Image (cartoon, rainbow, N blue to C red; front, side):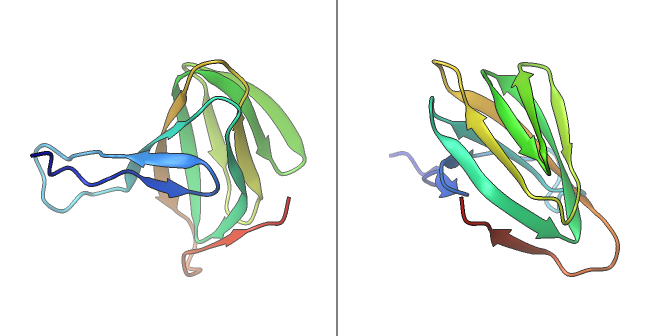
Length: 117
């Protein structure tokens, strides 16, 4: 019997994949792994209190950060600062996977707001 949790779908189309810290019970930092299907997207959203690093592991797409649209491929890293709207679209023919590393910034509370397309 498979006891792994079912992946959650966040921000429109990002499927959160399981990640396991192998040697610590209380992780020192928040790291998540996501998969986005071809032609699917991470909807436009904004955070306060944190920035994110998106490390593209496989696939290709475009990332919106503020008023910039940036093509991304495997091995690229994108910084999404707090209070700057951001989104990601898989423009390839295979799943795009990325690792999300969270950096707490300032003393604002953590919050996320989905923005209308």
